[in-house]
Length: 132
Length: 412
Figure 1 (spheres, chains in turn orange, yellow):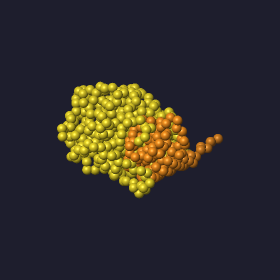
Figure 2 (tube, chains in turn purple, cyan):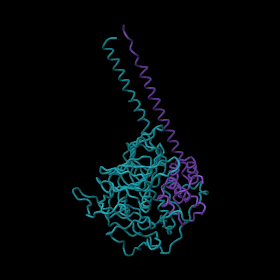
Figure 3 (cartoon, each protein chain N blue to C red):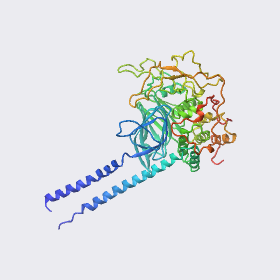
Figure 4 (tube, rainbow over the protein chains, first blue to last red):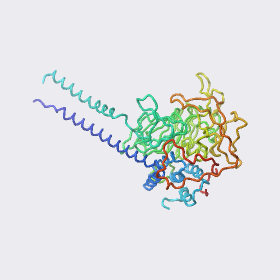
């Protein structure tokens, strides 16, 4: 009795569909991610939106993301003292004490109000906890 | 079905199977090179040579970055690349970078490799690395990344910074073209948020050194040499690296005059490379280079590059900058390298050590000028975003840098 061989084309078409679908899905995901990156970059063209973005990221625990955001702002606005202050403070929270010392030193003597200075340097204290 | 027609049918089936990946790759090729990230911040002279293109073109903000794109930055320039997984690669002035491999799956993580041929860089992981399979290469070393913030300098600046570090001794016989200084910046063990403590493995000359604490660094002086270290990088060394990665921030911190005054960040004077068959270093000066610091005398004390011994002194008419005994250094004249064209992407431009000249701007008085105030909260700035390449207004002011004492928690 002759056995019937399985048809080839349905299998090939299925493979084709899977390949196409995965390729389209990957492309879509990549496109979405790139759009998200564009949005992040756009948000840091100015100082105010950059600070707002960074604070949102800090609130959600994305300290490295906030650091990158502030660095983007500082590239074009190196004189934005509040951005540098927050950046230095974040370095403390990431346990990069020396990095924060160097940046705080940039700011020393440049008229940072007491309250802002104290808030920024508080995370450098070993007993500091977020939210205190 | 005859034997012959069966063979023909199978052949057509195989042709169809073979066509699937061909068609898929054709579709991908038609869509252009795969973007792995964007140029998220571009400052001044940044050029990118895309795959297939034969020349560098100016980088645009939010331009797509693809694998094997060659990035080259010029004087006072900077580029930040935001990768798909939100990792961040930043290069400073006179740097060359390419991303050689990049695989990202949101479910499992990312692995990548990149090459920094020259200049200063900073890399921050966006996510933990899959199987510790990510690396950054310099011409003479490889840095294995495990979720981290790492900075490095390749070239003459690395030699100069290393010369100022007590942790690594003298007589290192450094190659000013390839010497690499690498430092782990964090996060440390007590990090907060969703960051994980950083670790890197630096391999050179067949030896691997692991850095697992912020500010631990290694120095690879020349091809084939083992890493020197780990040692703890000094704050002044760190400030110098920062000045290379963030040139405008360093200018602002130092209150360097810009605009009409030639800014002494031109190509540094470097010793010539060894000729074939010639012992290294060519000048027989073991342990040092005649490289002159790019920032000359405009930086505050802790940013000052120590002048290597044996270098020609500036002309007598050039005022010297006082950096110690509590005297505030003045921005100003100093010496500048003769303006040079941007270095070629293939061969770094070398200069004679004698190409220094006095800046045309006369010396400022010795009385310190008050440091300018910070730009205070940005509340007034919604429309003030400056385009790439612009110079912040405060940089045009001259003045003395702020105090240099380092312990932080004190009052400003």
